[in-house]
Amino acid sequence: MSEFSKSRNKPRLIIALWFPRLSTDRLQRREGASAASPPLVMVAKVRNAIALQAVDRKATQLGLRFGQPLANARAMLPDLRVVTADETADAQLLGRIADWCDRFTPLVALDGARHLLLDVTGVCHFFGGEQNMLAQVCSKLEAQGLAVRGAMAGTAAAARALARYRKGIVISPGNEVEAVKPLPVEALGLDHAIIHAFRRAGLKTIGQVANRKRDEINARFGSATLDVLDEILGQGGKPISPRRPRAEYWKEKAFPEPIATDDLIQATLKSLAQGLAAPMQRNGVGARQLQATFFRADGAVRTISIALGMATREPVIIMRLFREKLDVLRDPLDPGFGFDLIRLSAIEVARFDVEIAELDSNLAAQKEIGFLVDRLATRFGANRVLAFQPNDTHIPENAFRTVPAQNAELSKAVWGKLRATDPVPRRPLRLFTQALPISMADPQLNWRRLPRTITQKEGPERIAMEWWRHEEQYSDRDYFRMEDDQGRRYWLYRDTATAQWFLHGLFA
Image 1: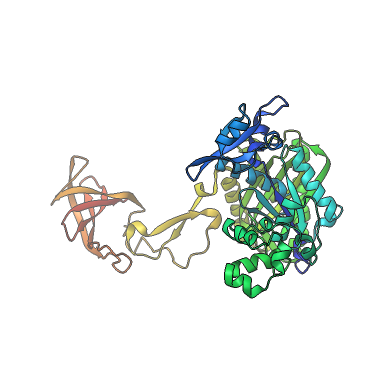
Image 2: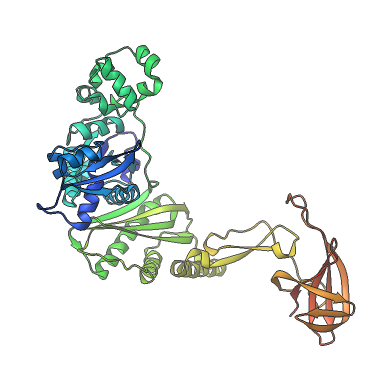
């Protein structure tokens, strides 16, 4: 079971990561940067003016800053390289960084355009303590060519403020007040107008704001400002909203040296599947959906998921399905320089009671069919392996529905009998996808431009449309079974409103 399940009552510890040059880092990581490269800035239109939205390290050292008009920047640095900002590409990069951060904790949340929040409650000891963990996170990101500032505190707001103004600091829960009081009021992250009002009132630090009466702040700036102030002071912090739901059952394995061979990868997955089986068995559950995450040494992350129609915790079945998935990947599982961490998570679980299949041939057969469905769905996609289920309706074309076979459950509706006491069925086994209009002049039936002579006819059987289910009114139908002089049998109906004839199906 997840270590996070065991630490829910512990004081929260949040790591905040700020990427001040995310946009320029993205471009320079792709193109490469050298000492001879010109200063780089990203620009966008703000209030009818072109302003700097990101500034690389070299441009910062030469005096450029965020929000500065482009005309002023060009006057200062004529050889400036200017690129239009791409918020979509930046968001994609931040998402990939968040994926990579899953190696430290699955509780990773996006926080604006340049921030990430990591809930590391109860896991810091795996990385040598709080300070060592924060240092590892930041150093590994910097090794990937990313400028990052990080801090750790008991609330997200405090950690976010400290990351921007006191890089690398770790504040234990309950001690945020003294750490954040010296910070400038900009660290509150409030609206620019409120920050400007604070400064005009002579309140330049968070401590000065905190020393004012709460009624005074509430009356002038609203309760939302008080909420932000309380959280940054470590009072009443809100939990973060992770990008993905937390898996209750997961196992992972880290490697001192990255691995790259298929045999080692599959052996690791099998070992992790065996490790998952024990805690799930103790709790009487099995996996319905499993996810394998592969963390590459260069920071890339690959994820593979499999779904199962019936819950299981058998490593052999899990491995066969993962091999099936790996065999059909359009984009092969490229290890690059190798994977240094592999994690297997049970994303969805269900009750799983062990039954003796040898004494129940139906159960054994059901499991075999379920496993076949899982293999086919893994190879071809869940929406391409379908099951038919009866539908609670008397409209012929709606008598059944198709659902993914893995998700098919026992339906309360039952299949109606198509054959009565006589040898001729009352309904054809197959209907046309759409009823075909025909011309009918008794005893002649004209279909596909060929006249057919009707020798026998039975009907009508009136079927009324389900007026209570549809706002639009549909006319009733009078159905007939007919046979021509060649022995071919038809199932057709006449629309009671228009008197138009339609051919709906053919008897075998």
